Each structure stands twice: as structure tokens, then as C-alpha cells.
Image 1 (tube, rainbow, N blue to C red):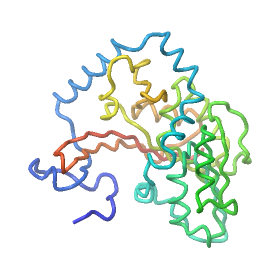
Image 2 (image 1 turned 90 degrees about the vertical axis):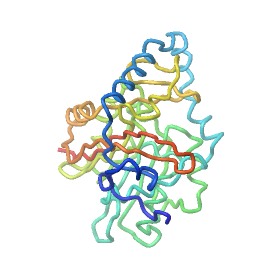
Image 3 (image 1 turned 180 degrees about the vertical axis):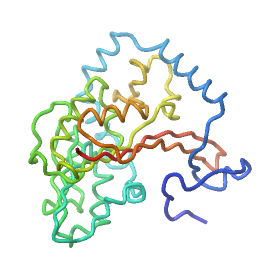
Length: 294
């Protein structure tokens, strides 16, 4: 029987290895000591065979074009709409009321978060929610705006380089929610503090919430990188010229708390995904966080 809705993180556990291919995913799958040693060995080898400084300088100089090329090629067909948002982040289901709610998604791409939020909250009828969404890629924003569900009545999409630290077209201390899903990992870690500090200014004090999900250390995608793709510790260049960084749980907590946020949730989403037809096991590690502005 097809699974109609993915259960919330932490609710499906594998108690018998013989059942591994009976579902698409399992939660809290602990690694054996041997698996951990193998992962550390792979990462150590990647770092030992990291790319040259000259190659990194070439990639760095081309970063402004990499994401536009990505969306020129894939348009709106690469990422699926993130319906799981409302399972993991139920605060994105917003009841209609007289109280206005303002949300910003940073790194919105072509709208795989924004359009599920629009549909789930029926924003063509509901009048108390307004969405801002921005992306580094002008191509992505152009594609998003062509979607028939995009309506300036309840959504404003714009091009924005979050590393520029330039002012957003939003009042400071006015946002109820900031969403950042698989975005910070695409930014060089030397800029993470400045990016988060700048964004936090726009959240409402004492209640504005920062919702975050991104790659964790030892995720399958990290272990698959070949030699000459590692730039520095836990930072890699993909074949398309974009970057990806793999976070540790304590590292994120320090990042958020020193920039004026208070922890509500910081968990490791450790999943075993399976391909039933090919009988493949894929170990995924993501970090999921909710922090509130002090």
C-alpha cells in the first residue's frame, strides 16, 4: 500500500533488519562502530585529496553564475514540493484570524516551499498571511513568478544575495517566521555568522521564529564526493559549481545562540531511506532546528 503521508521524524523505528525494505524510510537508525569508522576514513581521504587553491579560486570566481546555470538547465523540475514541511513544522499551518502573520523564506528557489504554504493555507481566500521569498538566482525568481499560483496580493518574490548584508525590503523586527531550508549549506562557512546575524534583525523580538533544515555531517551525499571536490573541512564543490557544507549539531546551536536566538528545537534527523526496487540502503543525516528571537 502506498504511503499517503510521511510520519513525523522519530516515529518509525526498525526493530528487525528483515523488515528494512517494507517501508521507504526508518528513523533514528544508529550506525555501527564500523560504519562510523568507515565514514571518518572516507572524509579524511577526501580532505587529504582536496582541491588545489587554484581550482578553488576558479570555482569561487564563478559562484555568481552557478545557480543561474542550475535553474537554466533544470527550471522547476529538479526539486519536489516540500509537503513534509507541515509534518515537521506545523506552525506553518496558520489559522485564519485578525492577527497578521508575515513569513520570509530565504533561498526560495522556484517555490517548492512557498507554493505548498500558499495551497495549504488557502491564501487566495485567507487574508492574514503575507509571504516574502528571495533567492540569489534571478532565473529562479523569474520561474517562480511565472507560476499561476504566484500572486502579489499575498506574496512578494525578489532577488537577494543574503551574503551581501544589504537591507531587505522588510521592516526590522516585523517577521513572525524565517524559513531557511537547505540554503545555509550552499554558503561558505566564513559568512554564516554575518548571514544569520543580519536575518535575525527582521524577526519580532520574543516571538519571531527561525525554522531551519540542512545537511548533517556524514550524510550520504557527503560520503559520495570524489577526490578533488573537498575545499576545506566539511565544505565541498558540486559538479555544477555550487557549494555544500555539512553541519554538526553543536556547531549550529552555537551559531544561532550567539546571534540572538533561543533554542526551541535542535535535532539530528537520522534516516535510513531505502530503494525497494533496487534493494538499496541510503543513510541520510539532516539537522532540523527551531529557534526564537530573544
